[in-house]
Length: 407
Figure 1: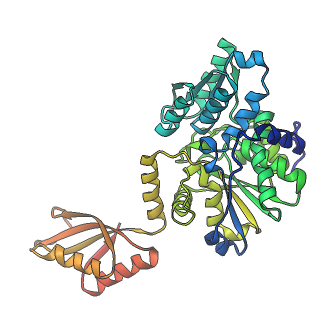
Figure 2: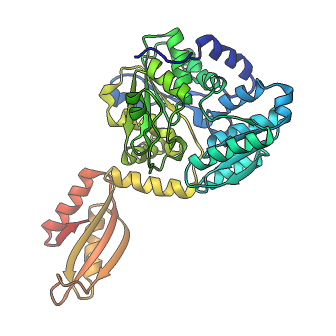
Figure 3: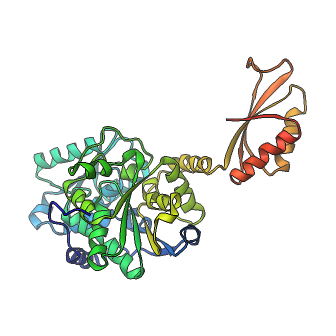
């Protein structure tokens, strides 16, 4: 780890934030994951910040920042930019502290996050396709109106507030060896690292970013924040084009490793959390779990993976679950040639039922040049129990004489 270029948040500052947040935020549970433990070869725990007030850790940093404003500053109101979770944290914190809140959000922000932010009393404006435009608009609004800009990650008070997650981890799992943290702009991992390293410098802290929105690797290599030219990830909550100067300094000085996970790995992790941990988590919130699933041998146990957000649009959840099932080999698309006569489809379906393949969709094709006269191609999408079952299904059809190709 390199020497920090700017003053870092201290363990004492995180402890002061914890005292401020007592009675305001929930001490979220630490849930053991037997399925992950079997892969890692030692205890693995999930720190369930998806069960926090507003559905994410963001209330911790937002409340800490707004509570430390002067009465005069709070009277002018606060303004923020967010894809959704920070928006809700700012809106609720401002309401409880008696400040008016204005929030700028991207156009594609999930509807549940929009509704919740407005429900907490904030005025919401939408613009742009990513967080870049809302950030610029929020700063301009602050300059024009005198409202205090509440940065989503790059402020000492925000980092200290988020760091209280790390204090809870140390208290709930005193023998922890590795803490794995979902990372976008870096406020959460910066705060957790500050808290953990102050008390237990031997604990390994790992930041995890979506590979399609990973700004930290290039920024760490350059030593300054390097904005990404493009981002394309389902994990909107960690789709941040650039770290801040402060969060970059924390990650450079305190975080042991930055890893990335693919969209397929995120999908599989979300499905894992639903099926095995019984947790509803948004794609951004499962990045740490995705990293452990992808390379379990890389993490020394006991491991704590921070599950950081539970605000997911049901429509997106459906898409991600389907993607996760496909990535896990539980969807199988086949094209099967059969004689074009009555009963052929029924015969194929009987064979599929015999091997317990669940048919999701069926489509006939009679017009392709590859088909012989009197043939029809049937495209079927099947739900299977996994790759082994999928191979069993294909083998069974081939054994009884079907010409089968997979998409």
